[in-house]
Length: 180
Image (cartoon, rainbow, N blue to C red; front, side, top):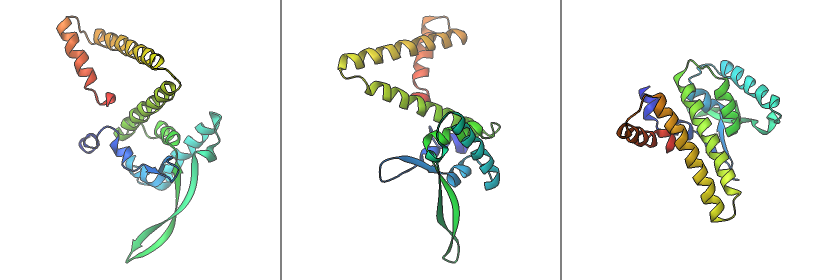
């Protein structure tokens, strides 16, 4: 866990993210393979195929999310050769993480990271629909109410009873990496 936790809150996934000329984020499958600790490209392709199937089954065109590319890689003494790679959308990465080996610690971290990022994007999209400051304020207030209910429930399940303990629990929850 030491290398994974030192990577920061998702920065291991952000570190290999690329952005095209139009500002669209993508990842390369071979980079993602390395992060997810798959030693064999063929084994990782099996995970990609499962993700493609999930993409199609959810009504999306897999061609929009999995773009095959050829890139040059060094093979020694300055020579290069072509190798196959795949451009992956954020959605694709999420599907790959969901279909990867759950026994790997990095997969669990990736599942959390992409779930949180997906939720952030949903909230951002929803927030962007509001035109007035009043609508935005009410939306944020509702989000805080829901969060506080969830937090109170988690505190109760954790055995927090005293007001001071609840205050400590609440402060620690806001220090959680998921809130950064």
